[in-house]
Amino acid sequence: MDAERLSAKLAPESVATTLIRAGLFLTAYELIKPQIIESVHDFFWRGMEDGKMLYDESTYASRVSALNPRNKYLASCTWLVEMNALTAEQVATLGEIQKHRHEIAHELPKLLVDPDFEVRTDLLAAAVECVRCLGVFWGSIESDTNPDFDGQEIDYDGIKSGSYLLVEYLASIAGIGAEEGERK
Image 1 (spheres, helix red, strand yellow):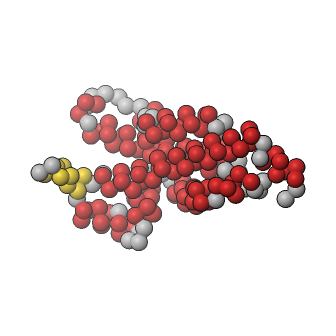
Image 2 (cartoon, helix red, strand yellow):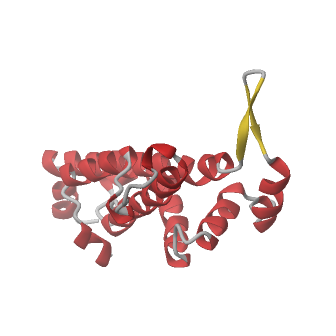
Image 3 (tube, rainbow, N blue to C red):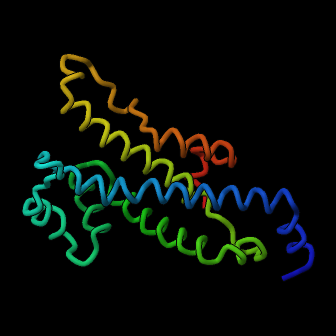
C-alpha cells in the first residue's frame, strides 16, 4: 500500500463519502430484508382473532418454505421471482448485496483505510432498484385488494413506497445515480 493512496483514502472528504455510502448500503439492506421475509409471510395473512394475527401457515409452508426449507430469505426470494416481483438476476444480485453488506458491517475499519476496499456503488444502485421493484409489487397488491382503489386506473410502475423514497433520497445524497448500476 503506497502512502499516496492511503493519504487519499484518509482525506476527510473521502472518509465522509465512504461513511455515507456505507450507511446507505446498510440502510438499503435493512429496507430490503423485511420486504422479502416478513412481507412474503404477511401475504398469507388471513385476519385476526382475539387480537392475534392469523396466517395461513400451511399454504405459506407449501408455497414458500418448501422452496428452500433451510433458508427463509432464499425461499422468499424464489417465491418473489415466481410472482414476477423480482427477476432471477436481481435475486442473484441480492445475494451479492447481502455478502457485501456483511463485509461493510464487519470490516468498517478496513473500509476506511484499505484503498482497495470500497463500497460497491453498482450494488448500491442495484439495491435501490430492488427496493423500487419490491415497492411496486407490494403496492400493486395493496391497490388491487383495497376497495378505496376500486374503479381507479393505477399506474403500477409509478408506485413509490416510503422505503424507496427514502433510499432514493439517501442515494442522491451519496452521489449514487441509476447509471451506477451499470458499473462495477
